Length: 236
Length: 236
DNA sequence: CTTGAACCCTACGTGGCGGGAGGTCGTAGC
DNA sequence: GCTACGACCTCCCGCCACGTAGGGTTCAAG
Image (tube, rainbow over all chains, first blue to last red; front, side):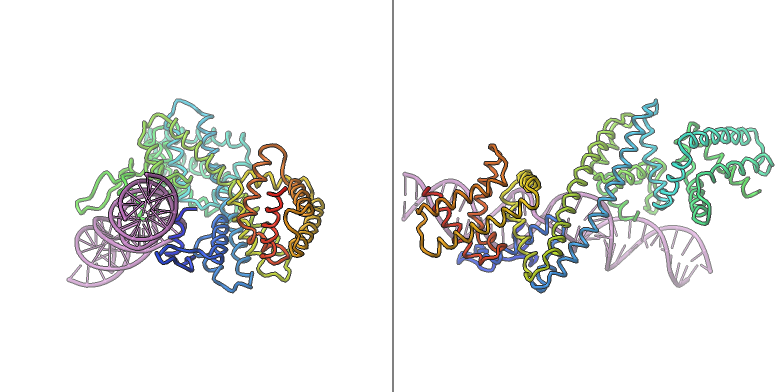
């Protein structure tokens, strides 16, 4: 404890020395000291000075407020611990990914950070959880297969775009159907899945360049493809 | 995200819009936006703005600093989680104790809070851990037996004090020996145990009134007994 | 042309103290 | 009695990542 903390407690009225020496020095009585002990312990338990003041200034013979406060604090700590657990998991994922690939793309980690922000902006936490569940259900080979399949669709789409096939063409509309079916494999059924699908679609529309950056094609070509597919979707 | 955060990032030089409209409005380019995404993600991972600036302003093609930072953050989160776990355990202990006894002493919870502070002041964390280990090793019946035994010693001591037996008397010195032997049951052997014993002794000397408050005798009688025992210890 | 939303800048507030400036008090040694 | 030196006092600024309020400008729609 530093004396500065005691001054602070004095300033905010949490604990002041009941007496002063003639020279103006603080003299803490035994009662003050007992109060200080309580304050210090409650501080180490993570309570705010305001909460401590509230519970120490209440009726001394009623332990209820204190028990309520401690119970509340226990719940807050639980939530905090859960949050920390999620953050740890996320960081471990990042480190694993960076260690896994260690490919020739030194920018990949940065791109992943950007995509995480985009995902958090467009999808709620539970939507992201559902997606993770779905990916887990598909298994790693299922995800790999979908990636491969999707790569084929992208290449097919790029060929259509760049050979000048109009978006209203049946080939383009069929590509959109297969594209959506593939995407649907990652979304659960029902209205909640529909909402997630819509949110993901908005995310693609607004950030196709950013998302395209994580793919093995130039980002502008991906952005063009997304616009083309949207046209075809409107047409069909 | 609020616009205020963007102003803040601008102020501290973390992220400023590269362009401005003629009217003075901020225009964020795509590069700015990508930087913002990285900032936001790193913020959610619990990094400080200063750390983020440091790692984003470094060489863009070297992922090492970023990996170091994430590893550091992972360790910090681990430590934080451990701390939270300890706090939860402590609060649960308090609630359990308050629920257990629910005796006629409404002040007991407050006294416990005071004693916790005293313990933390005089004993280091690992010393307290050793004591807890020792208590666990003795088992609850062992602790209960020691408590009962100790209660007998206290009563015997109070009789000696209050019947005017001098501290130099052999009966007092014998009581001290048995008292210390009983206390020794809670301390491990070796120099570390000796240090803990000495610290606990200072704690008793300085706070006998406070500690006595948790006992079923008036605190002043306990304080008197402690002084008497110390006299006897000096004599023997 | 008006209206309301969006943007700008400045400045103060938050929590729990840390740290420093500049002055007073208390005690020990000469 | 004087002088050091530490301990104490009050007052005030700083931290961190913004939130909030106030007062003025700009922009797009009706």
